[in-house]
Length: 422
Ligand SMILES: Nc1ncnc2c1ncn2[C@@H]1O[C@H](COP(=O)(O)OP(=O)(O)O)[C@@H](O)[C@H]1O
Ligand SMILES: [Mg+2]
Image 1: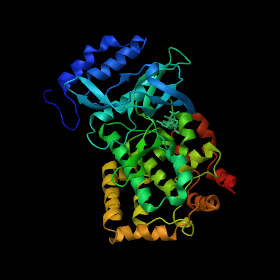
Image 2: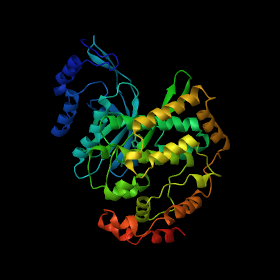
Image 3: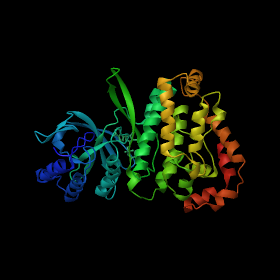
Image 4: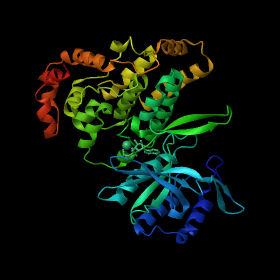
């Protein structure tokens, strides 16, 4: 094999030629799908960033595991499994056999386009990554057996579910070291997305997936977290309804003006930091989504100091989280800065526990309750009144560039929101 890259196990000349030579050996039955898969194979730069056609007979034990806003999910076992190593003598890939995968089916008006849009960011981001990858891996495309002509993405399975459910199940055992490990995984993923010039646009705890693996050095199971659902990173849709669903995680400038940016992803990351410590999503007392949107635009942020008797935010953690929520997107830290900051915390916690930063986290763990504290929601309401009470009613809301439906609610001013919170 000529000019093979050791890290990628990839030779542009021979591996691409091998893929092109096999173009006529497979077909999905849909010209558009075939061409899309082929284009990823022609452009591949590593064994991780091209798709394969995975026929149905290569998958077994297909089971429906859920439905999302855009489609259905199945789990399955991929009999051959993903590529592990190219064996040049045999001119074939050695594979990890019998791997559990997830299958995502998209049900929109243009399912092929949606499918491609969702896959492209994963592959583009994969191009730049040589080592640790914290983006959900996509392997290929298969056909939905129950609906012929409908295609599904074959991707790595988050076998421990999403972060939202993970927090619910594991809250009692989530000490700060684990929280920091989770955040480090997530910010690594966000950094990889931003380096590839994408903005995720939809970061929240249900779009972070948990994968289990065996830590060989310690002979025990461990989990890693990867960023998934990059559909909105490529597809520009009218996101109004969708934003309303996930408003808790949206930066004020996104809710008011649809201004997505790297900094709006960072805002969402700050909300995930809060959720990891408190155990629930913020603002659950505001069930009216219009009011929630209006309140966030007015400057509402999740409480920190008011929760003092219930949960403990170490000072460094609190500072970073608040920086991520800064109303001015320019003042939020970049993914690179957060990655470095959290990396230092993690090192301190793992190796040099005597350092003052590690002490902060250890002390917070000692004071912590092992269950999700009660009355958080009441404390949140009190904090919201404090925060929004100071805002001049006629001020911000009248100037904001809202879609017509939101205008109606915000123009009624913040007093209505506060009234509802009583
Ligand atoms: N690879 C996966 N493995 C396991 N569960 C997944 C996987 N991808 C998504 N899910 C689950 O399905 C839900 C919806 O998936 P997602 O890709 O976010 O679709 P949507 O675009 O509808 O939000 C996620 O919140 C998660 O709980
Ligand atoms: Mg999602």
